[in-house]
Length: 292
Ligand SMILES: [Zn+2]
Image 1 (spheres, rainbow, N blue to C red):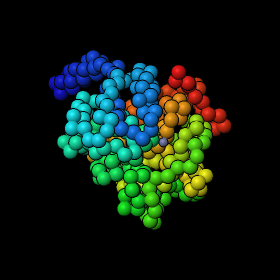
Image 2 (spheres, rainbow, N blue to C red; image 1 turned 135 degrees about the vertical axis):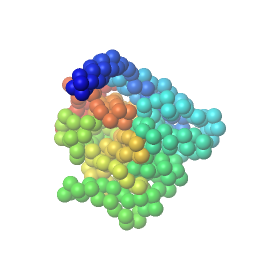
Image 3 (cartoon, rainbow, N blue to C red; image 1 turned 90 degrees about the horizontal axis):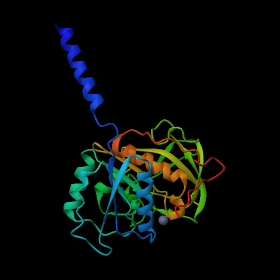
Image 4 (spheres, rainbow, N blue to C red; image 1 turned 180 degrees about the vertical axis):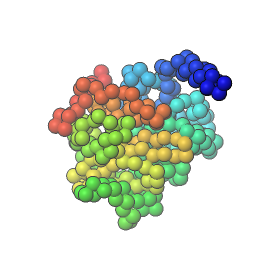
């Protein structure tokens, strides 16, 4: 009888699995509205298209008032599997209630994707700094947390010496070096790939707790290997963070596009099914898709 009951249970389980919606699109929300990068309306459109092009996402956008605080900025985060921030430096603090709802959303298992200057935002918001792991500018310094980089020995360094958080040199093309090839986001990527012209953020600082650095870039200015692809866990939530993506041409990089698609899927679900495209950059050659 026991075996028969187990078989019935197994049959029911199989039916449930087979009838589960296999390709229900993931809901993504891009939040924007205040960014020191004037291209933000364009990069929001580009990132929306990149996510939709993956075939995995439907994407909504909620835009904060352009100046000052916005008491009406109350996105329904819990409707989404992942929130992508296209905010930037100097963004006004979100309403207290929105901050609390957002913290609960990520802590409860929501996904967050942090692009470029979104790691400049909200220096005074402790929970946000924990979510992004590392940030820059906004008077960030050693009090914000250690400066995190990779040493020549390939080991992660948490440098607590005093100094400002956040800097960059002239825009250049630069190689991205994969440090964890086993992570779903980086799996199958060339060990080194050439990123299109971008700002190479350096000297980022933050709590850097529960953070893994998946890729770095050697910075000619600091002569250190700066974090370029990071994952952070915050409660049950997954955060994907890349300081890449300064301008539209930076976001046209196929490496950026693939990393965004994979990072967003990972933040939403913990898994990645986005394949590496045939036009992915190589160690020597960057590769871009003009957004038109
Ligand atoms: Zn920038």
